[in-house]
Length: 196
Image (cartoon, rainbow, N blue to C red; front, side, top):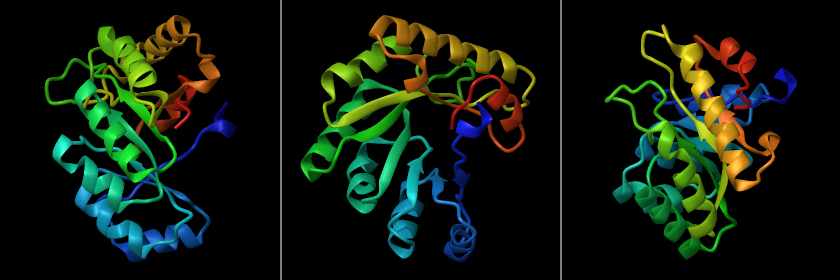
């Protein structure tokens, strides 16, 4: 349902002054692609902002991200067990509440895109749930093809992955987020089940 969709305003490369304007207009959920940027911006903005990290996360940047953004609400780009384990340790060491994470699935097959293969998303979700007590598995994410030609297929693949993960792990589908779509294809993404 479109009224249950959370819009993440992607603020990469945008100045803090512009984010403050968007905040003052009532928006509270922002997404950043780069650890250095989110760590610089977060302390300059109100604490009730819900930050989502949406970029590729390297293991050597995990501690910086977790320590630098106390109001980090979600990491949307967990694409392997190593990153999940690093996040789990960093969150645990800080003693904060469990961090919501999405498993990133490469639904396009493009080598330039991050994400686990669709066939591996169940195992990664299971790993997060069973082995990462400081993380909260919250769903799946994907980015469609760069030319948008097969984006509907990418979105269908992610929805199918969610069905398989939820069935295998006994999770109600409505409790498993789907984050997909950008400015150019968000309407299609919502039609196909995107919740973020």
